[in-house]
Length: 405
Image 1: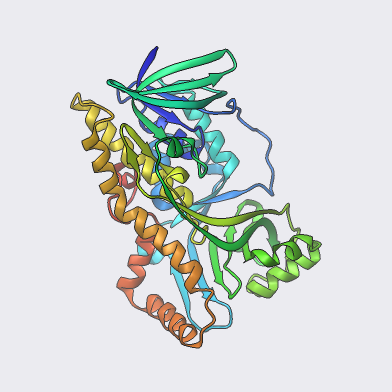
Image 2: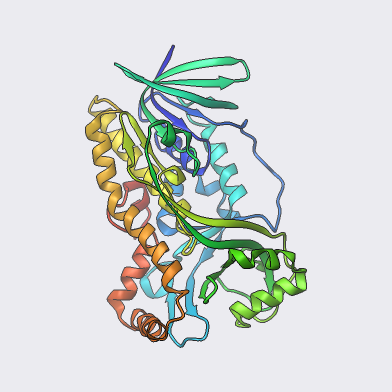
């Protein structure tokens, strides 16, 4: 039976980031992924893009991933937040805070390619792909994982098992970790459009009674659009032709960027909130969507998961230098403590915004506008919003701070 210090289940963005962060630590690290790794060279202007917080860009730079994707990224230099039919507006400008950008947008495919290329340079990482975790069991020395691979069944013993296997996490379920789940009764439609006016590095968040609309600046003058609608209305929106869909978008967002054209491929996702009731079990820890899947408002999902991975990596490297056990209960307890403020705060913020901004009660309409005006005009409130939006809430892993002025 092969033995490793850390077994990462999941080869997605968060699991791969963790594997890279542990490269050179002296730890024996293995990664399991259900599909074979493949760099996808095909560019698609309509592909899904991610909004990366400043902390994430810092970390990806420190991990040696950012140089390979920077040319495909678009800096977010300004942010505009408003609510349809109300007078409050928040305007954020990176230059006013001594920054070149709050973060960047990047095609998800390019980030995946950049991580995969960096994984291939990891000196001691052992990758099992395609392979599927089918069972886990504890013994006196660690966690024994059973893998189903093309060349037969394999068994690995790990000091620490990391569940980075997404919202429907096998690791979480196998450990008996319960979840709190909320169905928002909303569906997000993701697409791209061509605005008539240049976005000039500005990201927009527009709240409406039927859900938020976000527009992100992309390369080639395109805009990434996430339009949220009530799920009961999703079949109607899905059936719209391109002209009808653009008209729907204008009805919610307005004409601040002129007319939209060249609608790209549309993809829809029902929105649910899934929060693991605890992050750790015996010699096991959850990160990324396995730990929490949150509402996309504010675009914090991947950024939050990356901070999970970076915090865990930081603790594991310290433990390795001290000659300690990678799966020690004290280490896992410390990880959960360090992640609590950021995890709970970010999840509560996304959940609160999703509910609060859709409420049409008259007192709330006035309160919202006054709140947005206060944030826009009171410097400490604006600075706090900027720091949290860039991923600096609670404990900040050293890798996320490395390039922060």
